[in-house]
Image (cartoon, rainbow, N blue to C red; front, side, top):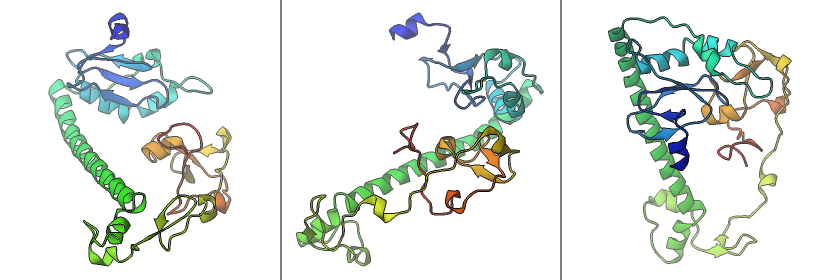
Length: 252
């Protein structure tokens, strides 16, 4: 609160359009109505005039203006999109009613995407809870060891769980299971190193998977390469990629 009261220039208000400067430069969004009190760092803040709809502008920057953003990135190590570059952006501006109609249609689609994302998050939380119960806390094994039918599991599934435990270096584990080093259970391959000269036009060759792709999937930020890749460096269906540095969301 003290910082917020002192730093007024970067305060955000609902309806402000914000453009990312570094990290994922050019990514654009609108400050929602429920975020009434916020401050920011490393964002370009755009406050629209009466002839420009904020949601229309955000959709425009995220799609049509991608080439402008890419052409105005500066910095060798950490590329960024600054306020001066944002000010040079020219926009094809339809009448305000058309802007609002376009934004309303796209917003309806975004609302559906957001609903699906939240449903997926709920399902993922349920899956994590089930995995914790079955394979970490061993609830079905405890139930069978106590002479009870495991709850929430049909008979065909419950039959795969033993009714007793055995000692291991990890503590008690279900009888018949083994405790082995994870390293011995898989092949571990370090990813290839790429130079700027290895990249080509988007869509040519193969996408190069980095930390950004682990977080956001293959998209506008993805680099592509036609460089010959060793078979063990190519990601196949079923492989588990992870980063060994960077974001705690994706790294071990």
